[in-house]
Image (cartoon, rainbow, N blue to C red; front, side, top):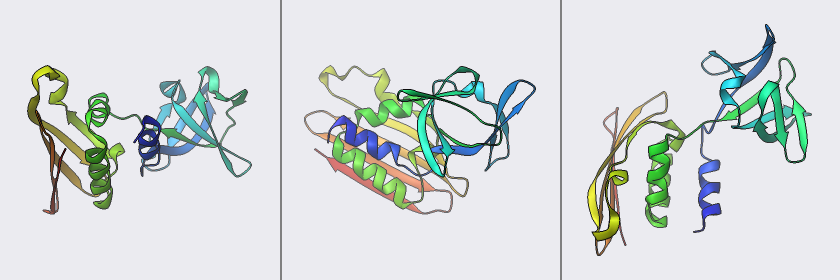
Length: 186
């Protein structure tokens, strides 16, 4: 699996965006999240991926200053009451952990998480022990992750042992008592 295939799997995960509308209030653009009904200044999302609904079609781009959106060669300007989607950011330590997983472990972890109605964008905490280890002679340890899909909480322990064989074991426990274990050995 190449880097672009991984990016595509991550990009099309459920709940990858905060959706809502924008309003121009007191000379500032304000984003109103349709799910939480919370307001935030659009400036907080500068340089992030954004999609804007124009002519019943979502146009993808990157948010610039002053309510501008760069879409390839074109620059769009936000309009009052317009619907937008802002891509959520993954927790940095979690993003690094996903990069460290081999392709098989990555796919099985993603598929299992999705089958339990969780998305990688539901991750609210990640302790990535791998970032603290020197990988020259092989490493082992445990990473801890917490996911919240607003219906259930999930705790994930990722046991790894990267010596002569590469072993990834994910122990997943949901707040309703459901459990799952997946293990990949390479």
